[in-house]
Length: 283
Image 1 (cartoon, rainbow, N blue to C red):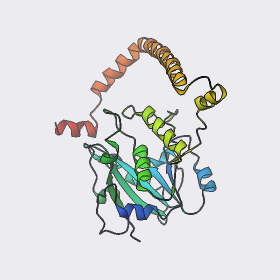
Image 2: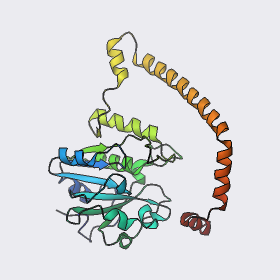
Image 3: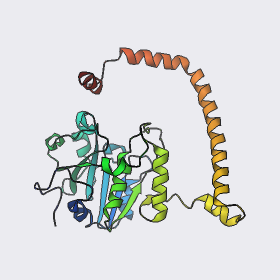
Image 4: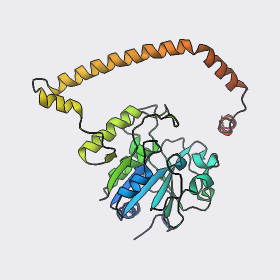
């Protein structure tokens, strides 16, 4: 069986239907994608996971790992306009130290948008590297002007490969924690809707289980209301609550006006980042 990480003859960028990827992932009974979230309990995942499980981590793994991870694992690195994010931020040695050399399989450098550029394999400090572009998988349906998260893109790609393994997602809640923020460039609502639909259809498993849709239980209890009645009323209430949130945000914007002025003033005199200098050179 071909191994995508050890066979240098395999192509660097493999398309969506590549048999090599399917053969590789088919050897595992479960594939667990681990989000960088405070909600992830790595020790619990390891204790409750059987043999034949592949763990997939993303980018800054120190958000969820505090020691060497000794189970079969892959690190997925997202690219930006300057190449893989952990490469241009010089974080490769920092993230690789969290993996046991005997069980670490390698890195997948992922790009999704046309502007994202791969980093060369030699930039990953000797780790085995393959590149994968998921633009063709996600661009037909993902909301315009937003970028898919790496985990969402990979989960949907794995689902489409038709492999026998259970695809399980740990910590994919899209909720901001006290330590880690979520980025506005992604459409978190769209992704959560899609993932819950796939979860309830049995294609993907979310951990923890979000449970049964309460509005389905509502209709079971009150059959005189149609799906449309419930959906329209839920939308009405949701819209009113969003309007209340918007009013609160408006008040906060007024209260923090001075703080925002000071923040903007500081940003103007702060030295440009390497990314800003890169973009300026390439205008």
